[in-house]
Every structure is written in C-alpha cells, then in structure tokens.
Amino acid sequence: TVAIDGDKLYVTPGGVNNNVIALNRMNGNLVWSSKGVGEKSAYCSPLVVKLASRTLVVTHTESHIIGIDAADGKLLWSHNHPNRWSVHANTPIYHDGKIFFFSGYGQGGGLLNLSDDGSKADLAWFEKKMDNRIGGAVLVNGHIYGSGDNNRFWMCLDWNTGEVKYEAKGLANGTVIYADGMLYGYTDRGELFLAKADPSAWNLVSKTRVELGTNQHWAHPVIQDGKLYVRHGNTLIAYKVK
Image (cartoon, rainbow, N blue to C red; front, side, top):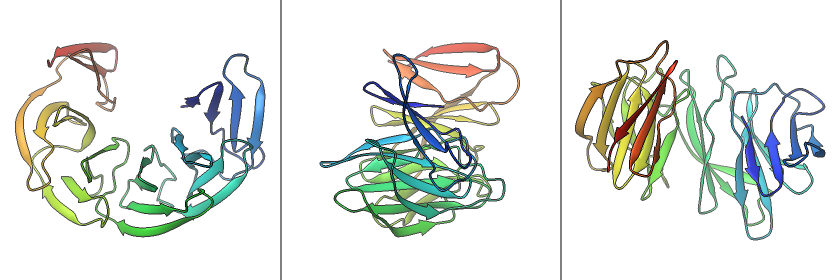
C-alpha cells in the first residue's frame, strides 16, 4: 500500500530501476524514482519520518530496511534484514530519533538509532522473539506491545533496551491497536480481545469471537468515534467501545 504526505504519494513497486517512487497524488505525475537497493517489494507500507532537517521515507524491501530522502529519492542508508519468505508486512515504528523494524518467520525485530539529519542508522538492539508477521505492534509509554509468529505468544518489550518484559500464551497471534490505555487485539483464530497496556504483566480484560464473515482473520481493526470496526472477509462489523 501507499503513504501520503502533503501532495506526495510514496509507494514501493520493487525491482532494479523504480524500486521506490514518489508521485504527485493530485495527478499521478512522477516526482522521483529511487533504485533503493534493487530488491523486490515486501508488502510493507512506507513510513514517513519528519526530522528537523530532512523528511525520510522508510520501508522494507526483500532483505533490507531502507531510508530514502523524501525530497529527491536518494538512498541514505540500508540495514540487512532478511527472512525465509522475503515478507516484511509491518510498517516500522518511529519515535524520538529511533526506528523499530520487525518481521516474521522467526526473524525478529530491532531498533535503529538515526543520526540527527537522518543520513545514518545504527543498530541499538535486536530481539528474535518479536517476530510478528503481519499484525503490527504499538508503542505505548516506552514499551512495544504485539505478538510473535514462530514465537506463539503476546509480549511487551522495552523500547530503549529490547528487554522482554513479559510473554503471554492462551490467545492466538494477531493484530493489535491502542486507545485510552487499552490494547485492542484481533487474533488469526477470530478472537477479539481487550487488555491493559501494562508493561508489568499481561492483563486480559475481556474477549469474544468474530463469528460473521469469511476466510482468514487478518484485517487490522480501526477505532473511530467510539466504534471499533473489524473486517472479516466479506463482512464489516462495528462494536461500540465508548
């Protein structure tokens, strides 16, 4: 999918020549094309990072996470991050000069420290347990919450150190979003749950099942105006949560 910032639309077709491109979102005209590191696309929606002196486009390709200057498409840095199937479907998370990147199939996730101008990225830590495949993660008050893939549990990591604060079993892996101190999770077995965003321990508040719809339980929930929206195949379901 795409990321939009102002009049620019960023997308990753992949390949050798037009690896990552920027389009004018009003008329579709090409603004710039970047060769990146010449790899295939990896299902990742790009992340736009606004620094004091530069805006970056950060995305995963086949075996790397890359940082591109949003002004002209120049490749600034890359970090090797392969996995078994070259699938990196999670948008990285940016906070306070650092980028968290992660993917599944046992690969794991790590934290990159950006230089002040975004031209360099150095690895601060790496944790194989956080190998989420497609469900994403959330950053809340200095802690990362999400589930694994090969690692079949939900977990909490310290943002700065990568320390695993807890591991919790009993629910399938899946997607997670955050609102008002609570984690809203939707697992690949159709479980919809509410848990407190508490780094000291896993604290499940309630759960139910998504019975309507078809096929895989892979969609990401959305909260808007006090309603939680969940799509399951051919069905969209709304829950009143506030």
